[in-house]
Image (cartoon, rainbow, N blue to C red; front, side, top):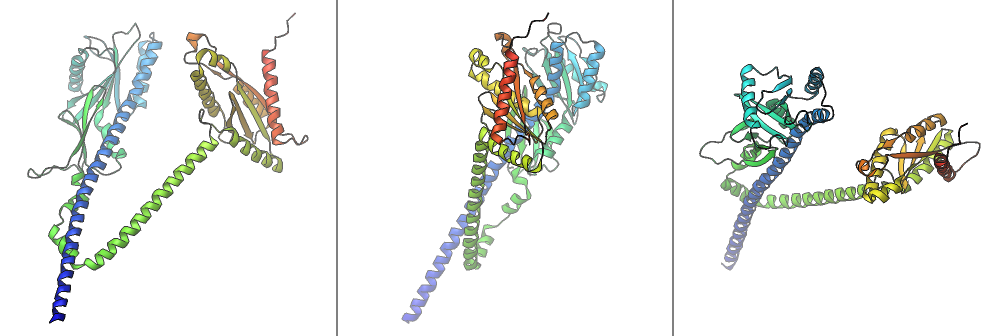
Length: 468
């Protein structure tokens, strides 16, 4: 009897432990589902914000055509009508979804330089009325403006106004008419990383709605994430539906009771599998995170060790190592090799008169100009101060002299130099080349380039001989 009682007690304890474990697992499953739903909404909102920012940049990129024409008219207010029409036709031809370009003045109808021929007369009349209402707003002739009108059911037009500053046009603004529906369709089709149902609203007007957007039944509250944002004067709202994806629908149909019975039935195997799977997953995630962190750190350190922080080109240490390697290769295989030493003329004057920040900007502009004028195989580095050095592999003497002369012709104007009477920055260039007869070392080649640079600078500053 005592044996049976002890056995029953064990069975009762085992059953209690099993029920307790099942309850804990059910709680964990419920908490996991809740956290997953919260994480899904948070992830959807992140995607929403990212999509709105990308859409804002996409719309603003379309304004570049208008700003280019605006700057042209501000500089050249004497363009004739045929020239304006040719300029507008070129802008329409090279800008996607741009239907037409023109000019509008207060209390006047739009003057179309490139008329939106795809719009009907009724749509043009509606566009004219919308522009008349818009141009009556205060301050419309001072700042850029963007707004949307519905020309007909199912078609929306994006209107951009760009005020002109030229005295002969003021007050006036450029008009750009864009077909908004294909623009939005192209954007959402190519930009969304996940197939979330999405729609875009201008107030209560639907500008875009994806094909898999689902209207939930009235007795069920939809899970919709929204994010309002502004494009100039336009106020748009973007919606996403994470709750209508197939994965979320499948998860929502799980029955807690069925899950509980399944957990109780396979308690032993499930616990072992989950422990092993969780342990493996945690280890894999930890290893992946540490590997990624080490990779990022290594890449950052490598970049810091080889790149000049100010100009973005290679630094002196990297160049000297690479130069030795290029010299050995050229010497071993008898290949041509040249070295250019570049110095920024008047850099001290820029620092003294405009400040060190302007000097940093000058160095950055010089580095950018040098990168654009060199080949991809050439090695450009900042050697120190305002000196740059260039290695030209596989470059003959004539080719190196051509490159040096081209660099000497460079003139880099300063953004604020006109007000301070500082001349544009020029470059002095010295050159040396590998000569097999003299058996020069890598350091001697660098010193020869440096000596050539100072010879060139003395020649520049030497007074010219009087002519007879």
